[in-house]
Image 1 (tube, one colour):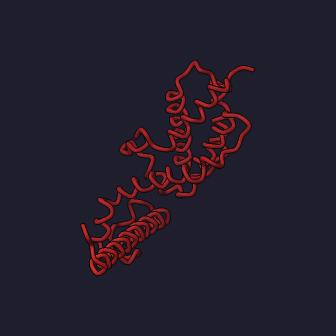
Image 2 (cartoon, one colour):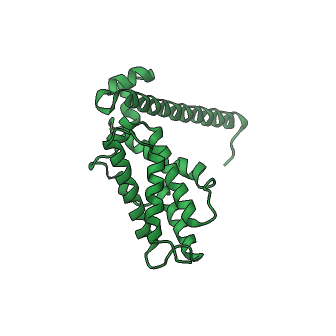
Image 3 (cartoon, one colour):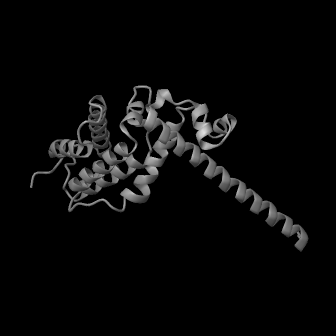
Amino acid sequence: MYINKKTAGVFDMLNKKMTNRQSQAIKTKNKIYKVSIDLMKKHGFDNVTIQDISKKAGVSVGAFYHYFASKSDIFNEIYKQGDEYFQTHVASNLKGDNSIDKIIDFFAYYAKFNMSNGIGFVKQLYSTQNKLFIKKGRFMQTLLHEIIQEGQQKEEITNEFNYEKITDFLFMLARGVIFDWCLHDGEYNLEETLSDSMKSILKIYQTKI
């Protein structure tokens, strides 16, 4: 099909407008998300309304609902952000001479990520209504799978247990520690406590040299 220069120019203009519109939509959604997190950290989840978020973000309430189904839907975004953080930053920066050390470093990053969200917001995340913790296929799980599998191949981690089972158990431990941290209103160092807990439990899975 022949497209003359004038028609091609119209298509280019439409594509450019669409790209600009999409870019603006992403910026607006990110702004609403950031404002939501900041307000929830400062005032607590229950004390922040959608009207508060919309006003602070400089958007209408209708705009909020365009990007998020509810205030709780912000949680979905924070998990997405967490997986992106582990994919773009953590995966390439894990330190350790062996897989055991890398797992400990992995959960140090996990603790830091939770601490960065603030104790008030984390308390809202750690609810029995939040099923995102056990959602399969997330990058955090995949990355830990790979570390454990590599450790089993190098005979640093026992093959007595399936790598998926080990992953599930370690995340269960991590969530338990973070829940306790919430119960104590964040009064102790989460990163240190979680690292110490991992060092103790990983002795079960470490091969005897």
